[in-house]
Length: 180
Image (cartoon, rainbow, N blue to C red; front, side, top):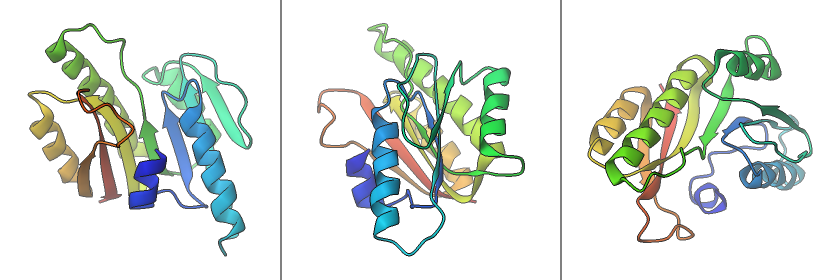
């Protein structure tokens, strides 16, 4: 996340951020630190807001709302909406979610895209215009279709393979910015 943030600077000190698949909490801690560092060196007065969601428990993170639940369930999505505030929208939605790998490359690819589709569907309602979506998935045969779909909703769509990711891994991130 730090590599991607350093290059694209898509999280601002005042951003409202949803971290889906947040356990054990690494990305959320990084976001909290970004808020702290940027806010102290920036003229923006409004501090960012962070909502973290995962099936697994997450240790407390300063100034974060932590929700333990299934992101795809309507009750968890309602809890996210309540944590955000009525009429509010997220500026950034991050998804580091993946199903447990089966070892079957195509099946893992399709399952990862299903999760990304769920996050994209949620973003239609809860991502602000101009907002960004960062989603992890496994590369495979439906990748071009997935990226094309994102281009319908975002002004910029980039596949990102951080240096910290193993080169032989099919795991990649898509950063979709400037929601239309």
